[in-house]
Image 1: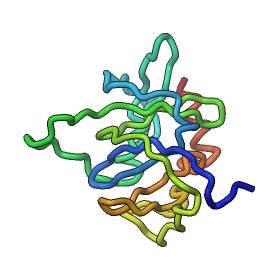
Image 2: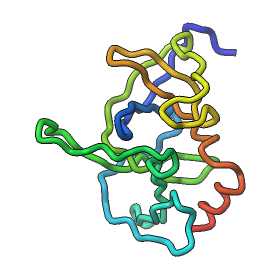
Image 3: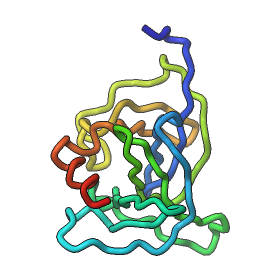
Length: 159
């Protein structure tokens, strides 16, 4: 078992008004926004697929999945840049749409707290923990629980 002082790193990103993070070990890469090809009869939260260097990657819209508003671009934001984070979920690549990449942050295990029952409209089943930060809190997503096994199989079958 890891000690309370053990550290790991989170790739943080913005979705709507909230800051989220996923374990860096689950991230394959971050890519700039590109055209997504829609897939007929896909689940409502599947935006479509992209061709990433010859590999077909399904793209998931977490805004739809979590019922979040999309971050509005304002004139004072020069670094507004959406994109995709390509995740490794059970040996499959799945992309999620993000509003903005924040940064990679080191986190101590002791800093991760249990999530409240309901947080920003997202059910606690998707949240691994909450970390306090200077600007509020960071929501750590559990990517293995974003989709139940049946949903994950549907997404994988799209490829």
